[in-house]
Image (cartoon, rainbow, N blue to C red; front, side, top):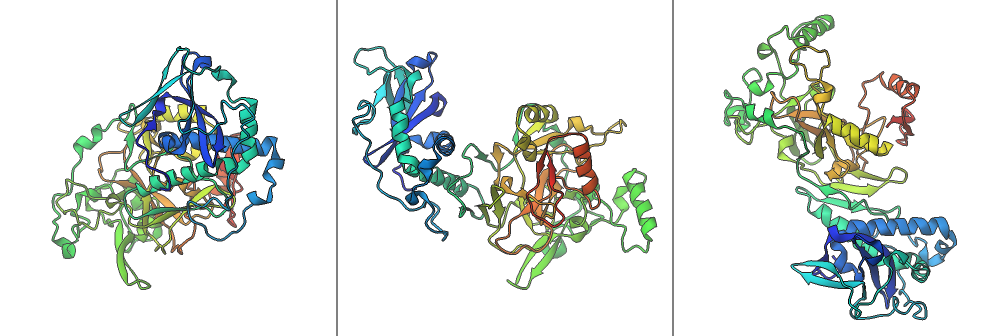
Length: 513
């Protein structure tokens, strides 16, 4: 990180906003308005970037809004040749384009605010630095310089900030980028990197990277108390790969049976499947498949487990073994639970914001990563969706795979299902964009056959994906033939729809929201 490591950082919960910025002898400084019951009496204080690590997301929001206002109100200020991108060559993650020395501000305008001092100014109070925190203390002493905080930023401050245009927040943007890269570096597993060759934007810092679901209010984990594992399998079975026989592995009890290869006609297979689905067949004696098979990639001479075609070409639930199984931790029926094994790269697309890709070739059926977030109730999800914009729907995933609103005893109602909300917390898969012709799909992965409300959502490659290709999936997750009807229904119901920008030949042109 190209900035000094701060011994103290502003205490985030006490900060109201960043008001304005200035550049003094090349030093970017930002004015903080601290929280106070009387806005006019709020403590104001100037800070260098190293103080702002704890509020990097607030800094990012300030810079974004500042540039947006500048583009809207003073577009002529952005036409200077030195501000245009000089080259499309790949740059360092910290590079923000060609730089020039930031000039000092004209000290003839409001000298109280625009003078270079070793100790930056504080108004309406003092600052304390203790235990790594910086926090304000309001004072009425005559020795304290006072100002009506509601008059900030003053016209002189705004003029000074405008004079610097992009250069005035250049270091701030690099600082935001560095904090984001630091966030990515903290994600477990192979590296997650970032590239933006389109503009200078950085993904939102108001996002928390987590390793597993965060359970919200009203979400129960009682079903996990009855978790059971397979008792007839052993670690030394199947060439020391654990579970070997599908009819012996109790974890597959509720897995979809495979009626192929039994000499049955298509009609007979369909009848058998319908009988199984209705509960008229004993699931324990039916032919099943383990979700994963060994795939040999001749290009790199590596063998790895991939999703079996029986599952990949369907939407069947993947049942993995768990910690209570006797098959051992190296069982071949444990893949998603072992975590991501491939590197990922967040990048800026030309038209669709940020996307995700893998710098390595991916094989058909290869596991990519999970979709995680805050696990909330159906009612809470509806409330959040109602209070947010249409983009909220793209982050909400209902765990309703086992729902059945037929009203029969034991049926799981949709309203009793939980929802994964990945808007404010989650993993790198939050950057995967939609496509009407996707190369990935989201599958249900269960580690407890008795728990119908909590399970994982895992991305797998639907086809061989060359390195550097954007990863996409169908937000509507429709079967063939359903797309046209679904789009028609959305439009007919006068729901909120957005234009689809995937560019696929079979693009539906619209997405539900």
